Image (tube, rainbow, N blue to C red; front, top):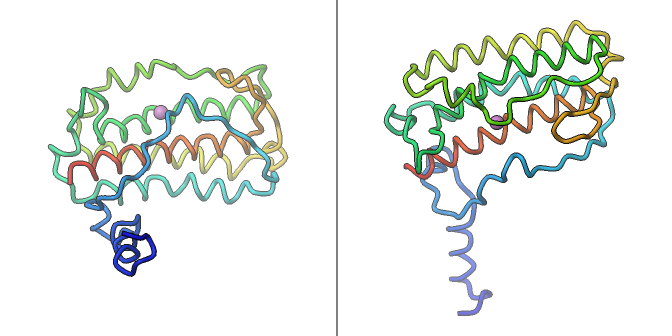
Length: 202
Ligand code: NI
């Protein structure tokens, strides 16, 4: 069948990646797999004046997370396909990293030599047993934890958003502004995983 026949065109529309509301979780399209976080490369070119937008993005993550997991039963949220993290563990991991992001804001403000290094084994999340906790508790703790850096950023000298430090794993200089983008991308990475896991279970 030619791709230009009306039928083929309609089926592309029907099975294309146009998904609406709750149906999005049942969408049968082949969404790309979530890219591997440690393989991500970053280029930072945006102007430092973008900091209010990045703060708004970071502030919105708890709401987006809550929206994503709402209404799913516990057994789906805690399911561990191939012993990998469950959706709830991905949510818990976002909470686990908040102390690192706060420490790094402190590094920028204090003008330290290097940014605090992350634990690349994610031991905290592996040992936390987030599946045993209530999801509501994780969501509430994450919302509270995320308000701390967002509130802190509102009070610092705006000139600090341009201060640059070396990222310990990427060996790449990052302005505080760039690091906020990095955190927002890390948020999105785990939100994408949660979506992927819940969609697959629908
Ligand atoms: Ni992560």
